[in-house]
Length: 161
Image (cartoon, rainbow, N blue to C red):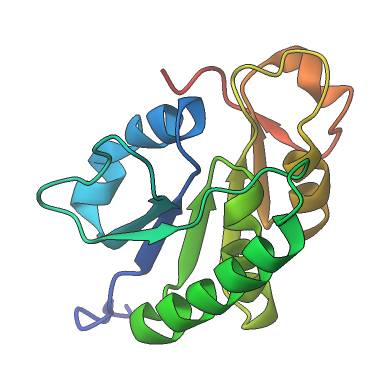
């Protein structure tokens, strides 16, 4: 009988989400944050989003309709690269959206696992970020059964609320 290696390190997890509802959905995964070595990646806002007991990193808020969208995404990509190199996450769990794309793509580029959870607010149509992440995610979850028509290879898990 083989013995399990008790020295096996648990994975380091990056929990990534923009502000607002995406961040609120991410906070539903707080029990996982407590269970694993992890950190949070979100956007800088005027209101408090940091968790007192969890390392939190901030990116610039971006909106694809703003004039500075491309420079802001380049800046967020560089910030994400620095955070990725410093933290070396094994897994990125993301609930979206735009500012989180660089961290998700870095995870895939460096052979790490990407888990994407499509927004609870999307019942019949996908988010733009969801459409992109569907191509890259190792596991892609939807919170409405109707979204399996949009993402046929996704896993329906019900609401994370």
